[in-house]
Image (cartoon, rainbow, N blue to C red; front, side):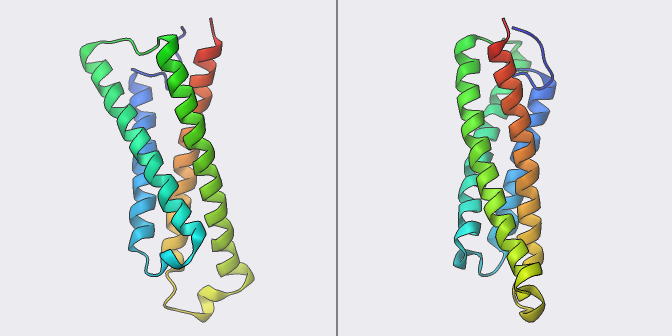
Length: 154
C-alpha cells in the first residue's frame, strides 16, 4: 500500500486523529456546558455523534501512537478495511449531526430571532459547539477519503 498523508501509523495520521478528537471533545464540552441544550433534539444528537467521534478518533490516535513508537505497520488490507468502515460511519453521523445543529442555530439566530429576544439562551455556545463539530467532521471526512484511497490502491 502507498504512503499518503494521514495514513494509519504515520505522524500525519496521528495529527489528523488528534485534531478530530480535540474538535469533537471541544464540541461536546461546549454544548454540555450550555444551559438548556437538552431541550433540543438536534443538540442532543450532536452530543451523541461527537461523543462517538471522539471515542473513535482517540482510539485510533492511540493505535497510531503505538504503531509509531513500536515501528509497526498498520496498512494491512484487513485493518484499512476496518478503518474505512469506521471512518465513513462516524463521518456521515458527524455530518448529519453538524448540519442539524447548524440548522437549529440558524433558525434561532437569523430566522426566529430567539437569540436577540431571549438573553438567557446561550446561542454563542450553540454556535461554537456546532463550529467545532463541523471542523471535526472535515477532519473525519479527510481521514475517510485517505483510508478509502489506501484501500483502493494496489
